Image (cartoon, rainbow, N blue to C red):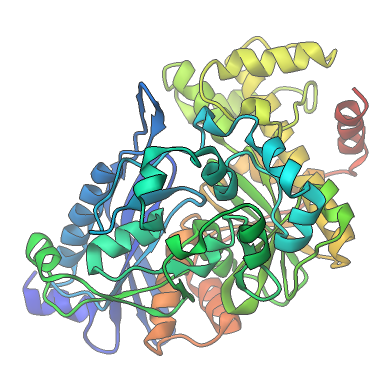
Length: 497
């Protein structure tokens, strides 16, 4: 294939090529999205591991390896498109950050959100700013690793004392690519330092907790320009400049929700992967005490929307078990799990007891034993317990979100890696008593690409984006089986123990 032919596939004949850098908790990838009039194609250019490292001081992200993977991915993406890309965008997980000194030099590897440094910190924060007041101001659910608690835990650290700039993970990588610092809004909304009503910093919260907002770079919106690839980056990747970097929904869930192929507004979504994020897309936050008690969060999305959702532990539970079991064949394991009786044993998939890595099969068995349920003692039994528990958590989140937001839904859209797990999708439909539409699997990367394409005038509003997804992406529909009585009874077992 000649360079000219490759260019026609990428940037010629009205079709443009966009690189979506999508970083997850266990791997990263660079995807190439080609968008034209009524067309959308996504291919993987490069995938690389994301392996956190435990050092004497705690659990850290190997952010230099991640950046190397990004550069390798941009090189591979360019090779697919004749050396030219029309834009680059980066999304990743939320809450974690890097600290830079006055020269813009990283002061150390970013701390992993599963690090133990935030244990007991929330209670100290609440002594100054009670949890109810904090929720009323920021709308963010309690999670021990929220950026606010991380900053409180780091208050006396040498790094924070010397820091002149704080950049969230996708903003840090964007800075290294372009030299221009910024703080993308959808990801900033996970820090517990943003007011979801004003879509600006929660200045009162920061003042009461003595958090210096000057550490953060200016806020950016999805679609804003984020600079051009540096000359050195162009040399390392072989790309022909100029290549703009576009601000996308840099929280991967914001990008994934942007790629939910929904028609209308009466839908719930579940973004599945290491975490399950289950909830609604709303026009305004829900800041009631009942919402706080139910631990729902109000994160910001595309075009002034609010992602009203609950964090659920997700497929992390199964991923950790597979690691303990030596990575058995997942297809065989799911087939065996599917043949077992439903709802024999369930655990609370949102329980912080499952947050840390290690001994996951034993911890699940212990939770079943402590709640007086049968203890699964085979990989298939534990897998079935995990999937039933996730479907049950999905049901609870979808049901409670509708009640708290007074926003009924007719369908549940499941996007992300969990769409490949047909058993989980069917169990979710059964548990919710609603049809489930599964797909796209690469929702975060597609949302990333579509925001870049929209910034260049190739795609219209969110409705048009979702119509394009429906026309071009494979989707699978699961109808609910039976009634939900057994699921209600299973939930009662958890709530009454």
